[in-house]
Image (cartoon, rainbow, N blue to C red; front, top):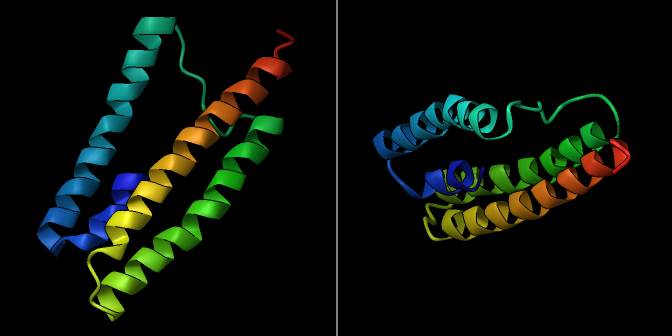
Length: 108
């Protein structure tokens, strides 16, 4: 998500390439998880983890909108890069939180 947020610092062609790379990474990540752990767990599964996932998304969306606004309206291409770093940090912290909630739901 950090890459998608930061992508607005670049021209349309590069932005599109970043989107395609992010989308291409999804099945690679799924395959890697299945190979490494024997399963892939959807982040939107029922339970408390869904609330964590939607909470992360609720924080990401305004950051994404700010990135678009700064790049396309204000023509500031530095702010999307900074917001992309923030999006990456939020995604990393959110991933750790999601994993903790998931493990606690499993009773470990």
